[in-house]
Length: 87
Image (cartoon, rainbow, N blue to C red; front, side, top):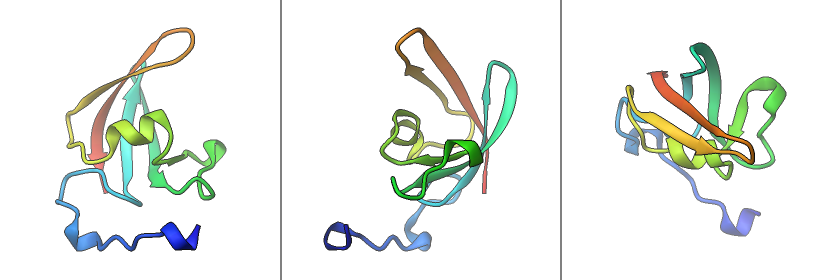
């Protein structure tokens, strides 16, 4: 894992976009949910709303801006999210 690790400088992430370690508020089915986004696979925890950059949602929101709408397909339906806030 360390062999493939990359250091990400938070100054290199454009302000207002989702980056590694961002906290964002997304809506799904008109419910607001706060997510600690784009954690590594060993840091992700669904019960604490920490999503991995390897998950379908994590992959889709990386680099996106506020107001972006994202559609994720699951085995039974599509889930639509909107990015409302990024910290």
